[in-house]
Length: 288
Image (cartoon, rainbow, N blue to C red; front, side, top):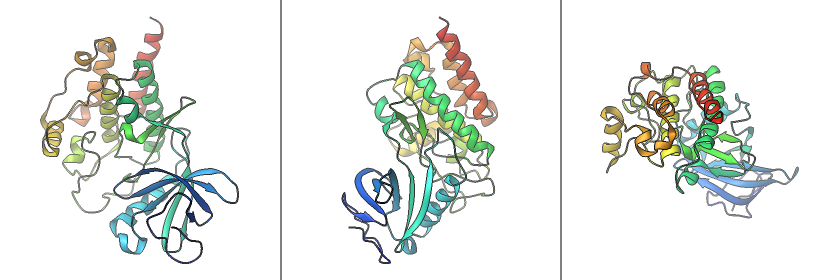
């Protein structure tokens, strides 16, 4: 249970724990680096999300550096399609990130039920691309774009989450040289290769992979092992999305394939360009 005051937080935080000025009311998710909790601010009563590392900052090493980087990246970003940063504080020896609580469902959960309606999938990706355009213009590359990091609210707003491995404009690496960073099913070839000059086009690739999955129910690159998946990204050729969902239309299928081109020079060069192509296709479908 978490405690107030200068003592360290025991990492096994439970519902009902008090962490600083926050009461834990639920567990929203967990990853390799930490956990995210639903909390209520005891002073304002506002419902927020609280992210903590699995270990104390003093013992976390690279994870602590990564967490601090995420906090500093989020503090620079304020956009309606990015889960908002509220504050960061230390409670005892523990560094805590407090951010907007987004009430919705992740797109990876939605696609498990089958492909999304095409218009809905396009709208979600257009919102994500708006967020990416904003971040890219401020020198921030997300590097972990995937449906699990996109939350759709009841109001139809898509929020981009988890900037835990984002790279700022002045950073050439996150931890060690040539480290492969990202989620293997969505990672660009240059991320897999450990390229030191990964740029915004890596996010465009991952957004294209995500859209492929949302409208077909399948990922463009898969395999029986992690090695096979990564090799497919590097050397494989994806099936045309229309082969899996003929209702998509050739133009949308071609736009997705352009986004996931192995050579980044052949992709959309900006998030805005990808979004504009989807907007054109969406507006054309409305006219049918």
